[in-house]
Length: 258
Image (cartoon, rainbow, N blue to C red):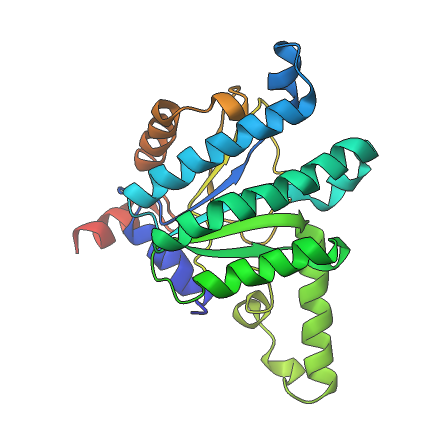
C-alpha cells in the first residue's frame, strides 16, 4: 500500500482530533535508567524490552495501525563492542520469545534498516519472523535496526538512479511521491506522532524524510519508566494540536466541518 505524500497528509488531517494512525518512537534512556540503579547497562535494555511489549499492547488495544520503534541506529555500532554484542543477543532473544505472540495477535512484523551487517542467525530470524506474520492485517510493527535517516535517503536515491539508468523510470517523472516510494516505510502513512523519551530534544537521524509533518512529543522520562499513563498524556497532547500542513486555520476548520 503505497500512499502519495498528499494522501498521507490528508489522512493525518482527517484524524487530527483523534488517535494518531502511525506513531514513531525513539526509545532513549535504557542505559541511564540502569546506571541510576547501579545496574549494568544491559539490564536497562532488558527492562526496555518489557516496555516495548507494553507499548505494542497499548497501541494494539487502541487499534493504532502503525507503530515504528527505533531499536538500533546505524550510529550505535560506535558503542563499546561488548554492549553491541549483548544488544544483538537481546534482539535475537526478543524475536524468539515474542514473534509467536505477535502472530497470535494478528500483528505484522518487519525490520527496516540495513540488515547486511547483522550475523546470519539474526538475518534468518528476521526473515522467518517477517514471513510468519506477512499476511496479518492488524497493526504493522516496524522495528528500525541498523537504520539511519541519511542511509534511507541514500539507498532510495541509489535505487531510483538504477531504475533511471535501466529505463524503468524516466527522470522527468521524478517527484516527491515517486521518491518516497523508494524509502523505508513506503507501505505506511507518514508518522502522525513522534515520541522521544530520555530528555533529548532531537530526532537523531531517524526518519528524516518521513517526519516532515509529524507532531513531536518529548519527555524526560527514561524509556523503561515510560508508563501507559504517560503514553495517554502523549496521545492527549496530540489530540489537542491542529495539523494544518501549510493551510490556514480557517481552511482546516472548514474542511473538518464539511
